[in-house]
Length: 444
Ligand SMILES: NCCC[C@H](NC(=O)CCC(=O)O)C(=O)O
Image (tube, rainbow, N blue to C red; front, side):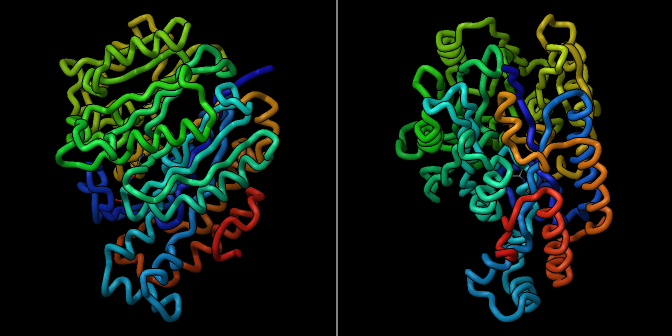
């Protein structure tokens, strides 16, 4: 049977904006109040997804969430007509309004943690939506995320969906952004690397001083238990708290893996050598550990360019390619490193650059925009086929974006009640295009 690693990219929602909501995420804070272009953002994402499909990769799309989230605004006491809820919130608590309008579900690396059937005891593919409790605007995603994932991976014979973890800091869970899987072939049992920022229930362990550690060891272990993984298939690694304090808010800003390759910065982890030894002990295959030294790429350059928020993909030819943001070309040290990497005799043979600047300006690179799902051909056949990228879906979604999206949005515009109508009209049509059923609250 054939095995693939599919990527499911987040379709950027109609309210994409820059609100400075993510403390600890340098781009989000420094680009706060910039004017966004939701139409361009959605199209940049679609271009990248289509390019991967054209390379012969299995590529899907995950629908965005309903924003403005009027239900949360009502839950915290704003009332009256929908227009009045927005107006009141804009006047009394603009940051809460912003939090309820973010298109942050576009970063599907944070949608869930996924364990392929080759790793799990019941032989099913497991999904746990991330609770994202560290950030208010993201903590309102998991319920709808679960519905969208279930509508996309709908066949219970193959797919096992869990609820998100308890909504408490002890279980801070950021999904696949803090999870990587190493393996020989995608269909063989692999080793799942769970990278956490702190151990919440043990105050004597290292943690960052300045910025939050969003992922806890407790959450990572809970997901491993839920997904029925064997201890021999898991490695728990602590992220270096010093780099979290320099803006590395998720592990996928400093490390990325694919099959037998782990590409990471020298300063990414604590106890690096010890953990590499554990991986080697648990995974009996030829492994490539590509460690990037600080002398070649400083943390600051890695954070600005998103060198590690790249996708490493295995092309149908068997060679690996890196999907990088154009920001990596623009950073001299990073560009030089990527060119050198191609001469290093690793499986990575090409680097392809994509303009995803609308997302980058909020701290989301190519890897943040996708959820990886390693699947066999029967599982691919069991996916909702209307979510899979091809020529028809690409042109349909581009037309849909042209019809419904604005090309300019400021945080002031978020109080405009017209945005509710635009957004709901667009999403209602999208659920028909992607045959998702009534995943949104306004449809229920
Ligand atoms: N994996 C990348 C996630 C980026 C995301 N940014 C944001 O939510 C920024 C939103 C804003 O500031 O408007 C985050 O930090 O979780």
